[in-house]
Length: 385
Image 1: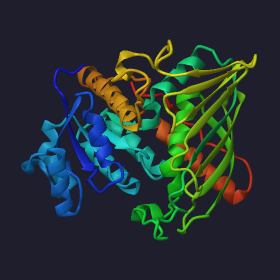
Image 2 (image 1 turned 90 degrees about the horizontal axis):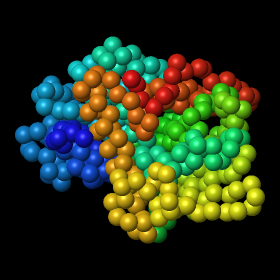
Image 3 (image 1 turned 60 degrees about the vertical axis):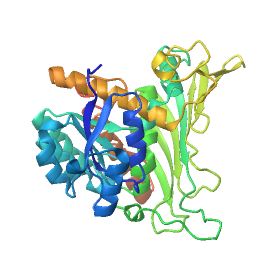
């Protein structure tokens, strides 16, 4: 563990952003990081107000992120990129080119081409890059991965992964439609809903099974208030002959965030629901049904680091994110000491590249009305070492 908190700066992540305060809360929870500088917003008033709320000194608040990089380069351990996804590529590449470690909110970039450019810059600089996929920070998902690795479910046969939400079909109590962030109302080469939701499903399936998507057939539609894709279904074939079904939506009334993962093995199946994150349902081949939680004798979830308070007092989304920030701190500390790092919990850019290629194949499948193969990835292991 680092003897001092690692010095962190935010690019984006103002109080009015979708994820800024979440990152602020999570990075500070276990004392591994300190937010010391930021270019939080292009709006000067929001920028100042955010800095005040985050406890950042006035002289270390910048109107321009590139100016912050120039001024703060020698005083930072890492920068967190929290701007809209379409802006990530240029910012990430500039930070890496300046030798600054980068933590980037998913999605890493808006296309496989942009991610390839990021990876080329990272490799040229031998830089540090981590992408935040927060859901795999939940202890019971880490427990599930341990069960799969140890063979408790048998051979993995198939899975179902879904992430339905309702935000693009909801109205408020006055009947008014929501007003999403502007960048979410435009679809690029990869529709924005993939960058918002599908990235999580792709990462979680790889995290749990260690397998890779090979071929997909997908359908997509628009059911909500806005002229963008907001509902996608996909059948997919993975390595090791695993079949899968993926569904994600922003037009599914009744689901605030219905992230659910179901893994079916030859000996048992497992089900995890994000709205009940402390429990893991195991169904055995002999008919037994078992509910595991942090109060059980669990291999992973019962570890001290996940017990900020005892079982029966649920840990949630922010705590899961804080677990990931701990893991990133460990990886960065190792990198600072040896220029190398490895983590089973933190992913660099290779998995993001695989995901982008999968999403591009899904879009092509919809257009061609047929199965489409996914371009091979050199590697999509957790970290780069």
